[in-house]
Image 1 (cartoon, rainbow, N blue to C red):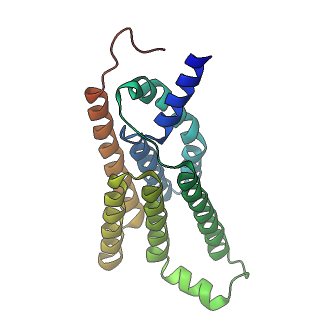
Image 2: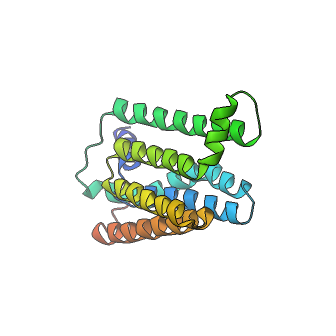
Image 3: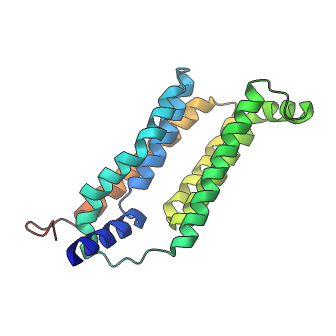
Amino acid sequence: MSQNTNLKEIERKANQYHGDGLIDIAIGFVILLAGIAEIFDQTSLAGIWVVLWLPIMISAKKSITVPRMRYIDFTPKAQWKVKLVIVTVVLAVAVLFTLGLVVFTKNEILPPWLTAWLREYSRMVWPAALVGVGWLIALATGVKRLYAYAALAVIAFASGYWFNFDFPLLFTLLGAVIVLSGIVVLVRFMRKYPVLEGRQSG
């Protein structure tokens, strides 16, 4: 019984530990697939990853992170703070998605002037909103790398706006950079905390 309790505590810590680079890879794939979906006009591709990323992340945490948590001195943040920001992020994404549907499906719920403004400046409004969501995720997790990604996104989208670069391509490149960064962090994590033979369980 105590062994199961100990394992659950380790899994809980592993889910809140982000020094393994898995959160970088997950976020990067979302952005990467969003860009690819826009390029090929297949928006359902991005939706597939959104549905699959949670079970994939849980599986990766169990197989990669959990066996190494026994050797890491890590104290999770207060649960209520994490949950508060997670709820805020989910609500923000839901609002953005709904607003996007209203604006681009020619729905008349919003005032015409606001709809016209959002359409005209969509190349700045939506990326800026997504950067804000990324900042909230960084605040919730305490992962400083995510602030760097948000800053990189601001630079990329500002350059795209001022120099008329292709935004789907920028999304794709930004996602690829974040995925590669996450892979580097993951490799370093696995090398720093190798699973010793015979100590992977209990």
